[in-house]
Image 1 (cartoon, rainbow over the protein chains, first blue to last red):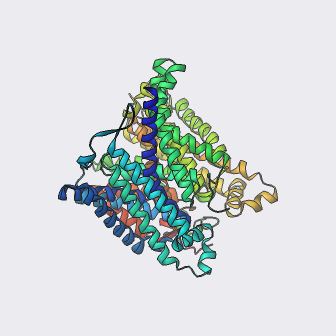
Image 2: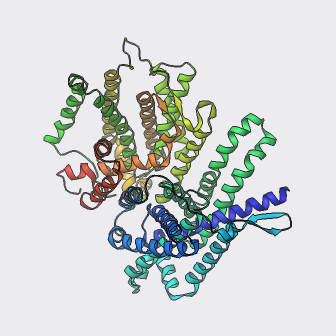
Image 3: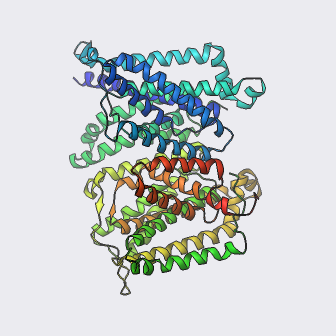
Length: 306
Length: 321
């Protein structure tokens, strides 16, 4: 009983962590290679979810909606890079914060103009509505299994892309020493546009997949953006490996904290105190994790640059 | 950072400008009451309270080079201190407001002691992390309203026959405190303390080599800024007669950062100018359309590209120094 509960919560943590990884991967690459702190990354996630929901409503098929959202959000990301982000490369981080904060404001209002202020529905595909028995006595929602599979698949693909391909080599070169890569003849403008578009597409995957589980609403990007930032800071900015480890850590700690901390506290504290402290402690668990990591390793777990 | 080293205002017109603004600000409640526009007393008061918070953030961001994305937490701590003290019967402003500053300063000291070990973006993120912890702790304070927040039964009492429930009186008290904060921070920037802080911002290794305990200077500045933000919190609690965790949410901290950048980071009146401009813009745009975020975002983008030094930088005739 408790073992299955534990396994279920661990799977939930894995599932949430993998989606955080998709967001954090784009964020950490853009930051590590282009040195741009992009607060609007969460807006791309929101746009991905909204487009997926619209296409799913129009066509009735989640399987058309997912690739459509990824392609469309990729185009939005490319347009954003060409019109705005490109002009921010040489600016300091604070200008980037102000400009991309402005993009958040604009994106939120544009979404409100197009889709209205109310949250909209995105349903999981009907075929995956029910649970499957993945171990004796352990039923797990098949849709969440799909998310885990897609997340693991994309993480593997990203790993192969970064370590085995020529473009991936340029990404690593840019991440560890941008000036040197530029001097050695890397076509940075194209590389930057490609990376930013890739990041937008990955966040759209996360938006479309998480849409049926969380609400598709304005402001959804701001909440998850902070989690993605926590992930890349824990992992070490610019490091894909760090983003992966950080995302799984945050996903598991957050999920497990919410599920188990109140009960654990109950055993050592009085009921009333535990009931009040439990949820608060669970919510701040990941921030305590981040502060602890930064206290001992101020550059994160896997610093991309030494 | 690129802000001018001194941030000293251009002599002449700009020297009398603050006093001119002060006179206008003092007269505003009488004018507003005479024109039957009492609403603007509240609006101006809110602007001034945020100006206090933004000025304190500008002090550490602009002059100390410490970009904190958790400053709203100190505002919230000050607000909650006043509200909780009042819930337990402590209504005197003379005790509750300094207590609010003390609580905020204590937290700033502890948070700064840990956070200042990190640099750059990591510093931004660790201050954010601590602010989020305090935010969720406030959400967890069920006996003080939890997520719904806490109403104040009345405003703090300052004695001397003055009643803060009288809207203009609270306005003038806020104005006096804003003036005191601006004067105090300007003094600090000119003093040896501020010079050392600027030196650390420009080249910490050199300052350390000369023999300054740079960590202690930065921590002291961070703590002072926290205390002033706590004062702003005590005032906003009185202004709204309400506190809630939303005041400590990270978007509030981001708004304070945006105010400083909009006003002009590292300029003496940058925080004041930014808080005024942002809140009045919001007010103005919201009067015309529900979709006021969109034009506000476009204006902020225009600031980034056409006035990268913010309002104070654009108004200052002094070239880069």
